[in-house]
Image (tube, rainbow, N blue to C red; front, side):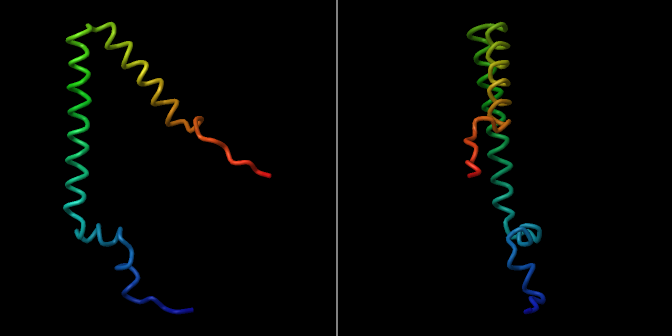
Length: 82
């Protein structure tokens, strides 16, 4: 079996990320995450202002149910084991 030596960790992209090689990518992902959360909060406040607290709570509850269902994996097509 061939020995990889010092070159093995450098071939792994996660190792590069740990060394700081993809710092811009990490910062960009954090920025997009913050923007996504800000848009979510602003849209919820907009619904609250336009439609009031009852509809806002109802829509948030519907969203929670749909996200839970989506994340549970029940929507996936199961593979046939034959």
